[in-house]
Every structure is written in C-alpha cells, then in structure tokens.
Amino acid sequence: MKISELMRKKYLSFDANDKFNHAAVKLLRKKQREAPVTRAGKLVGVFSVSDIAGALVQRDMFGKITQAKPEKIREEPVKKHMTQRTLYLKEGMDLTSALLFITHKNPDSIPVVDGKGNLVGVVLSADLKRNMLKTISAGDKEAAIDEVCKPDEAGASPTAIDSILQFVQKNGSAKAIALAREFKIPVEEVEEYAESLEKHGLLKIEYSLLGEMTLKKIQA
Image (cartoon, rainbow, N blue to C red; front, side, top):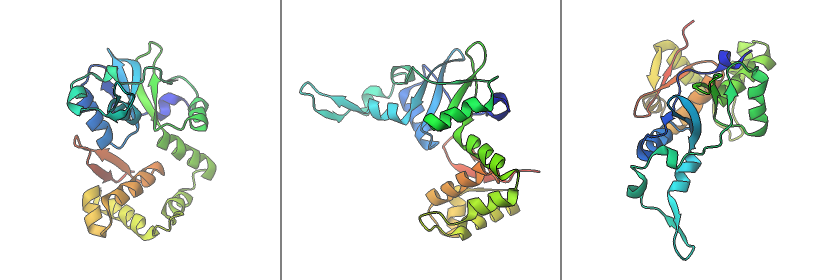
C-alpha cells in the first residue's frame, strides 16, 4: 500500500501567518498534539502543544521562569512559534516508511508532501494502527470488535462502549455530549471510546468548528 492510499486529505493545518491565538485554540479543542503549517501551500513546519506551552513561559532578567502574558502573543503569527524542522512522508512512498515513524516517534499525525513539497495530506497514527490490526487479524472484523470492546487495564466496563456503538449504528449519528447524557458517563470517556472505535473502523468521527465531536455510522 502507498502512503497516498492511506493518507487523509481533510485535516487540520495552519498557514504560517495565522494568528497564534486562533491556531492554539483550534489545536487544543481538536485534542491534537500537532498540525502541519504551510506557506503558499508548501510544508514549512509543525505547530504543536509543546510550541504553545513554550510560548506561554518566559525567563526574566534573573533567570526565573514565569508564565508569559497571553495578550503579548495572541496576535503573533504561528511561524514565530512553530517547529521548523519537521519530518514528513512523500505520497509515493510505501506504507513501510510510515510504520517507521511509529517505531521511532509515534506522532499523532505525519505530514505528506508531493514532489514539489506541497502539503497534500496527513497520515494519522490511528489509521496506521488500524491498518496494523487489520493485517494481524487478517480481516476478522469480529476479532476487531471483541478487541475494542473488552475491558482495559483500568477495568473499564465494556457495556458502555458497546452501547455507544449500537446507538450510533441504530441512529446514524450522535453528538458525544448527547451520548454522555444518554449513558450517564463523562463526555471525555465517550470521546475515548469513540476514538478507539474509529481506530478499529467501526464508526467515524467528525468535529464542528467549535471542536464538538459527532460520532457517525460508517455507511456500507
């Protein structure tokens, strides 16, 4: 399989001149660790949670580290705070190249560029892991369902995740906050279950502009 077959063409990214405040809020609401940054379509860096944290601390003349005043950096461009040296994949590469990222770095997402350096997509770590699961289970979907619905090390009940999956399959879609009310569990728990179900190809997740999660049934 080629990178171009696995990559996602709809993804979060920023322009180098986007305002820090806009990019930081969007990244944190999406609950992503990082997102690619472009200038005139070309990949120039990555803006991450670490970059946000780094911008919010400062060192005074005595060497003491304190929190920076947000109003000073809100209007600054992303390019001032992004990480410029970033690893990427080329769309024509084999999937093996992406698996090496999991071996050594395990990022949330990996930028993908074409032959001219233009950003054309991202490969999500979740998609890579799902592909690995399919390879290992040889397409046994029942095995995938059993794996995602079993209790984890913390002893989480499989009932909630199974109920969420059944609810979405029956109704077609549901907001995470509505599912939290329906099953009387924290919305954060619903989101964790949803991400696990999406990784296993059992439903898909969409986000609103405000970062609200909606779980959707995968149409046959």
